[in-house]
Image (cartoon, rainbow, N blue to C red):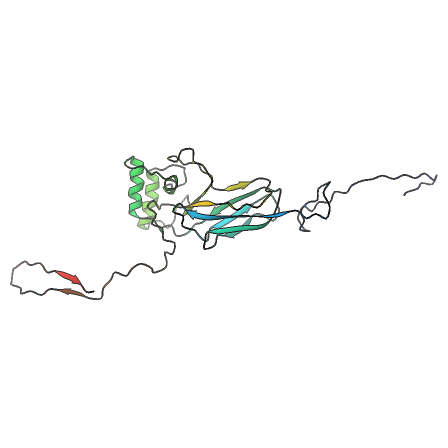
Amino acid sequence: MPTDLAGNQDFCTTHINVQDNNNTCGFGNIDEGEDEGEESKKVSVSGAIKMESNETVENVALMLASQQPEFPKYIYSNEQGEYTFNDLITQNDYTITPSKNDDYLNGLSTLDLILIQRHILGVKKLESPYKIIACDANSDDKVTASDLVAFRKLILGLTDKLANSDSWKFVDKSHQFADPTKPFPYQSSIGMGSLEHNVSNGDFVAVKVGDINASYQRNAQSNEAENRSRTSMMYASTALKAGETITVPFEVAR
């Protein structure tokens, strides 16, 4: 207790608010009124990425953004299309955004162009909002002839990628389309404000751009297709005469 030269004494009570803003100690901030020995709760966020057909999509890059200094963080979906962000400090805002940009031609064919053209002309409208999103080659949130031109250039080999779009688009699985026939705009990321608990349903629907007839092959580099070639052919011999037109039947050797 302090004492001055005249013998007067007094005291006061105060509180010290210690903040670990950079999470150097690994406990987060200790707010006034909290027990100084109490560790901030850590939670996780997980989900799965699948196509509309329920086929899983691997090697999707997922970015987790937050205002915390060590963010953003990145991970990739596994072979089952699953991902998990661990050790997230509660009471913070987080946003997950997926991306994948490879193999533009996988699943894209002239049949897709026909389906897109029929949709544009109103001959046969696409009923799935995800297929309509797949038609948008230039990311202008509509389906027009310019999308057909962009896909045609890819098929003809005039370009090797789309100028304004990745080869994949992603939609928050929980997103509700107000009008499925007009799916634009749509929610392409998942936001979590003041996260307080584990999240296990951070799911996305993956859309392969240009693949309208669902012909995308997950293992396009593998040789799983049936080999239909034959090493020999047989034909039925017949007597020939000069100037005579005949039909020679061929049969594939089995």
